[in-house]
Image 1 (cartoon, rainbow, N blue to C red):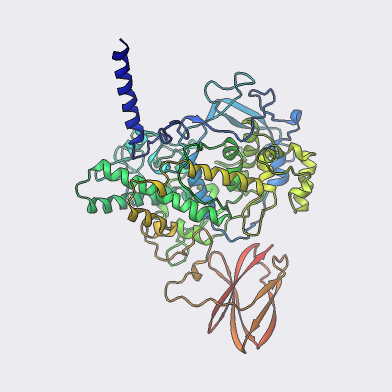
Image 2 (image 1 turned 120 degrees about the vertical axis):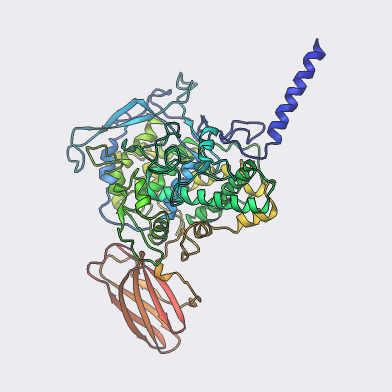
Length: 639
């Protein structure tokens, strides 16, 4: 009897070993990536924690109010996060940073809200200028992971509904049903609609055809859509910049399918689809690790290959706090620009009018106008300021479904049991911050934090993270966000068996192609855009992008002071080897000429006091100094 039982067990074990070790393509849900721990990073598994959760009862009750030294989130939002003017990012980073960041966020995490568990602690204060005083802003609590929140040894946890790997699940989905609906099953390609856009939720994928009630679910926080684009992630329709990335990587998939089909006539639909899917995921990884993260000042240790002991799951602190940094970077205006740098006939649109409005994509002529605009506009500064479009008009006007994203972020950290700012720092081996005046160099911000919180040990994690002084002149954010992002993106890379550099299914030529591809390359080969800066994550006015022989940039030994300037004057000091004429242009980050003047430089040091236009708004500007020998660019911050 023993031998009869033993043989089937061996066979079963061998079959399991073959199915996992020989798996050359990712599963859609991320399972089996790690052979020894097949559910690490998989969809429908728990978020990890950096620190043990901090609930009022140690189990699940959140610390929401002053009973636990937690001020009203709307009061904090009004006092600290209100933003009345543009505050451009001093590193001249473009809208590509936050928009692509949202695309990546939607590739690695999704926590479902529980409609039956409503939080009612965000009371509207009496002096509120937007919402009705005395009313309540309701928000749903994040759904508890099944079986958690039962006792102090099993506190409430949360489930990641999608897999945590950077694998282009935004394009393909995290489950097989969604993935199959998106496919044509012809030549490996994905479905499209007229204009080479995403398919609509209809039986043919075209906008005017009959609704397909079997189409995958897509989110609509406005609850107003009956027709919408369908994508790998449910949040694709949230705004047109996010949607543009969904479209361009869908096009890249189909372009690769055509290349693969021509190169390998014997390959069937499945093999072409899976290889193109693998390549698109690799391209996104390349852009994340070699363009996007470095642009923000995030430096990871060198890559030494796959490490099977690393759990690549997303942490709750990353999801509920640190990676919400992008909410301070968003601009109110969505720039729509023609290929020649001119505004499209419909002009720019406000973000508040674009939420869950997929028709804007069609009316704008596709993704080209959005990518051109993203490349020219400087994002907002990474700080404790949030534009009205998401602080008062998120998904609707006040009183008509509108929400406050800053208040929601504060409350989200509390209801998920995310510990305080200092508790997270301590657990990561960082020193505690002793006062608000060492947290930030901004006296006004420190004063408000002191008034609102009283003690820095009560500081909500997200508030502390976006208020913290930046770690250096080339970094977008402070020490705690930097530390969490470095750790999270390292485990997502090192704990991924299919990371493109160690994926043996990709040929050497394919890996080289991936390594040499930039975000600009993906855009240019899948749109009609032919003029875009090489580094799209750094804003550049259209006028300054070379479309021919490159004019030499030279060192004019020039400097501006004061810079930033709060007045209408600044002084330019420049040194010239010879007597010569210099053309000076002030250009904003939409490429518009603000003012121009011709200077005469004598050999030696020269000083020019420049008077700026009285109505020149706050923001970041380029000062271009050009002679017959070349040009130089200075950046001026107008406060």
